[in-house]
Length: 409
Image (cartoon, rainbow, N blue to C red; front, side, top):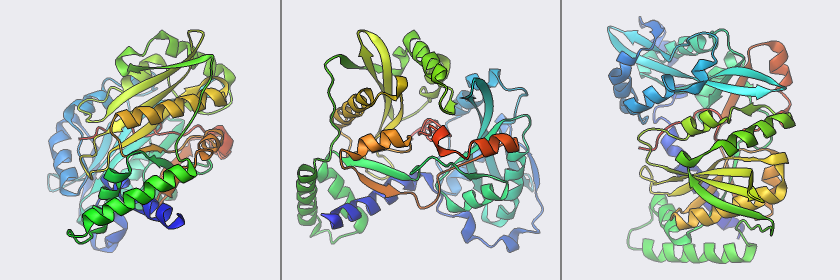
């Protein structure tokens, strides 16, 4: 069965992440050829929307709907806490044309009783002839003041190299670059794999059937699915619009535990974060209660798979009082059942600290690794930067960065 696991991991890696990578990577271009091309750097404006959308489309990136610009840079609750009105991003302009772009999204974190302001880089793209100027885009991003924390979430190696040149380091949470997943529907998943491997069309149905049969046997033999039960706990499902005051109570209790750096999950922030306009993905919230009191929740994102045919459900976030393992197991098991009802081919968990990943390992998931570190950070002060080098302080999930802020189109 080891060969099956290796095949599944390799193919799903490329299929799922393909929508986040540009076909023209920065490192494949000759920087020397663009070093002397004249261009200027300036802050991005809402009036640049059409030009930036065109730039993204030309170079294989999915552009945001205009509604999401409003969502990110006018409705974002973090803006009320920023000490200055920051830029929405920067563009490189040459001969009146936008040839490079980097967005900056405001965010909030909490650590040791303090609220930290953060900025997240997003949407990095540039014309090949001007990619030497991308360093200027990054320079403007890391020059923002006053900011406590800079974050870059990306799976593209070249972008990570530039981030490191500005003092960023990989987020030290153990195994963050390793994604774990379970196959829910072996036959549709196998057909996606066969299509990717470009088998002879005449043989594809037979190969697909045999591959799905092997996956089913492997799943039953290894018991590859999450399981959990607790007599005194109940799990219910609600819509994002139904997130209520009990989430704020749980959030404040979680902050009082004071054990980790946490992205803001206050009531306003949750509602905003998961109300991305024009998003083809469906978000649902699984709530775990004990005697009627909310003690944990999990947000699951069901993606339609329009870009590559692979339908996945992503565990976007989970917050549990005192990190109780029984509550966590029950929520993940409920997520697995939800993903099955949603018709997803796979259920995926990315990030999360070691205690949660150990729970998942009991259920024999498949795993794959990013081709490059997907999360970089930089503390604005040397003291903060050094403190956050302790991986045990992080609670990194897809809620961090821009992973779950970008709509599936």
